[in-house]
Length: 498
Ligand SMILES: Cc1cc2nc3c(=O)[nH]c(=O)nc-3n(C[C@H](O)[C@H](O)[C@H](O)COP(=O)(O)OP(=O)(O)OC[C@H]3O[C@@H](n4cnc5c(N)ncnc54)[C@H](O)[C@@H]3O)c2cc1C
Ligand SMILES: *[C@@H]1O[C@H](CO)[C@@H](O)[C@H](O)[C@H]1NC(C)=O
Ligand SMILES: *[C@@H]1O[C@H](CO)[C@@H](O)[C@H](O)[C@H]1NC(C)=O
Ligand SMILES: *[C@@H]1O[C@H](CO)[C@@H](O)[C@H](O)[C@H]1NC(C)=O
Image (cartoon, rainbow, N blue to C red; front, side, top):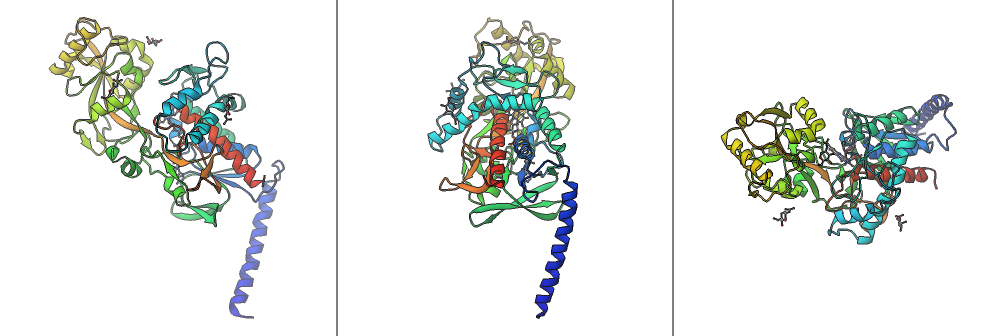
């Protein structure tokens, strides 16, 4: 017998002994678990936002083991920050006669706009999957998971109130993330590995077979079907954002500052679309205590909508009621106040009338140090006279030079040096990336010939095609739940050979 042969035999017998030992202890520790088709099979989910947690929940509900890999130390992604809520129509919480809301699909198609980067039919079937499944998605969270989503608001672009959140203090993103995570952690089938970054998707021929990942420098490999739920690239200011939208390079974001992971999928044949379609929010706060932090807090739209005005070096420069895009363009037309992050300094000014209409928001911002209560004179002579002119327009004494017609709850008439105002500094920030990998309505990642890549599904902001030019508020959490469930279900079928 050759020496290498001996080494091989010794090696393999050791391997078999070790494997059977591990298997035996594994089986005995699993003996309390309900019957499973096979303990050696498991699925892999990449990303622990709402899309990944939903997919993992679906797999665990099917009795299948799942490994959830998350590069951050803490799970939840950008999902944990979502504050407006999740869309559903029709639901039992919507006001008005039951089932009156039939226009969610039409509103979404309209908002997606004219850009047709995939076949119209393909986009429309993604949208109808999204909207048709919205009733079930909300009821799964409420009735199956016990999450409170009883308060419904109407956001811009929606014909009816359909964005659901809870009645308590916990924002909807956090309550969904924390509840799904808690319920997953109760199952021995669930394995969460944080601080573990997926670095490569492995392929055998045309099938995806697993991932390579790195946990604190230690490289590991896992085999199994994969659900990719790695989120968008809004926080990748110098990377993907600079690549696809050079005009937005270096912008601050409401997202965490992390690299996009879409390239891991294109390396195995996935296709991208709409990568240049990026939602920018015109008003996010500069925190005076931490001005250059690239992560920003949103200043709610109501502040502007219900009477707030914008000042640049003490002067107004736009009708604040124009679209998000127009307001952003007006702010970014002049040179930025800082390059890293690339941001501007615009004052958002409110009076006590606006305060009274939005006090819950404003109290929070004041508490956070993002807004302060002060007097008109403290803002300087120029600002005080701009506020005076605005107040005259609001009172109907003059025509607003910028064409503003609606002044909301602004009530200050005679602007005096000691008139009370609330003020915060704002800048535009990147909020959401509409583009991503192309999926089928079954969440399959499609290749260049529009064929599903076997063993690979995707859900959430990492995907593109549903929102087109503009995502409706509340529809990204919805896509996470709808396509996360589909992806989990599909991966489970694949594991079970269905
Ligand atoms: C402040 C804020 C408020 C918002 N409010 C709303 C709202 O009210 N309603 C709404 O519908 N939408 C809202 N959105 C948008 C919505 O929150 C996101 O689009 C959505 O949560 C994305 O979920 P996701 O699961 O796809 O990704 P995420 O929640 O971002 O999770 C992706 C996870 O994948 C991990 N990951 C990425 N790459 C890798 C890798 N290679 N290896 C391992 N892990 C990786 C990331 O670290 C991250 O944790 C808001 C967004 C922000 C920032
Ligand atoms: C969604 O529902 C409508 C109306 O019932 C139906 O015509 C459409 O085919 C459905 N779409 C999907 C993807 O199930
Ligand atoms: C936004 O700007 C465009 C181009 O200047 C203009 O045509 C449009 O009317 C503006 N939108 C609003 C709501 O004012
Ligand atoms: C603020 O004003 C709007 C529009 O006038 C109104 O619908 C809303 O109920 C008001 N909110 C509060 C808290 O006063």
